[in-house]
Amino acid sequence: MIKLTHPERRLRDILVAAANTWPRKPEQAEPLIIRFAGGWVRDKLLNHQNHDIDIALNIATGVQFASHLEQYLESQRVDTGEPFHFATISQNVEQSKHLETATAHFLDLGLDFVNLRSEEYADHSRIPETMQFGTPKEDAERRDLTINSLFYNLHTESVEDFTGMGVDDLRNGVIRTPLDPLMTFKDDPLRVLRAVRFAARLDFKIVKEVKSAIMDPEVKVSSNGGRLNVAPSTDTSNYPSKSRRNQETPPTYSHAIYY
Image (cartoon, rainbow, N blue to C red; front, side, top):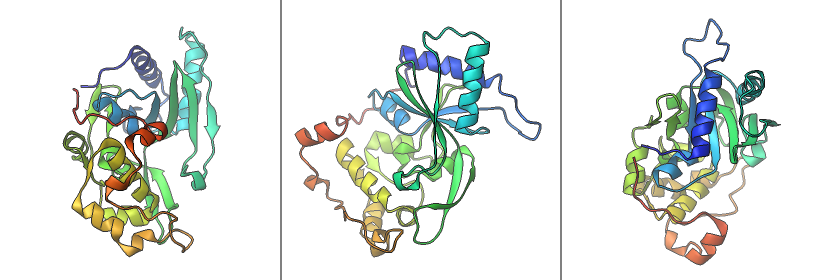
């Protein structure tokens, strides 16, 4: 089980209270459900603190909920010790921002609000051709690695592993993609770099099928028909030294997972 810090607990309670006042539309079958997603969940399970939280929403966009939260805190006069304000980050494909998000710094935490989504890619493009609200499973499966596909449900206060592999891969120190790795990397070749970087940073092992996909010639073709500037090796022994990595990335984590 994930143990929340005091600011994280305070944030969780505020978000759940605000979600309970969300004006659900008649056609929406389920209530607003809020989840912490991705890297924060991974790091907490590895007993490493992460002050940046991606907040995933099932029936609201990030901007819609951030606006609702702002109004809720003001109308209910919730004492948080600081005002809540957010900024809207527009879509920017070149910086891998495929969707408009709301961002805020609140309770000493960096927050990004975004809706769960599913994506479909055109051939030879890392830009999603279609994007729409998705289920938690669809959102988990579109992510780069299983270890980054986990959710923490704020309402049940439990970890959700919709790929069925994320928790085990964290425990076993494995780098694996949620779906077929060749398709995953062809959709967005930059995921290759992320796979190799996480393997080196966490001292995890890249599974055989992912290694094969990384070396596939089709994966190296970028959206403009050229080639990626970096052709990463799956041998992480050539990664920069630990002292140099510590200047560039967070420390290497223990494989132990805490519940």
